[in-house]
Length: 80
Image (cartoon, rainbow, N blue to C red; front, side):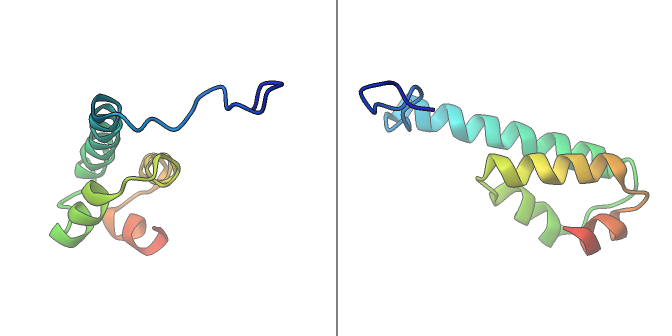
């Protein structure tokens, strides 16, 4: 969404504190996914790393919703 002078309402943050905040949010989302998956068994190291290195909030949200719907870690891996 943009204002009348074509400036974004929420500009992409470029400052160091904002980037650290975004990384923290992504790490928190990744942690929630891994915690949810751990209810279904051991999460393979490669899958853990893929989740922990993801920076797209959209993808992390998608994986979190998926983790809440699956019945096994294997199902999650096959659908991610």
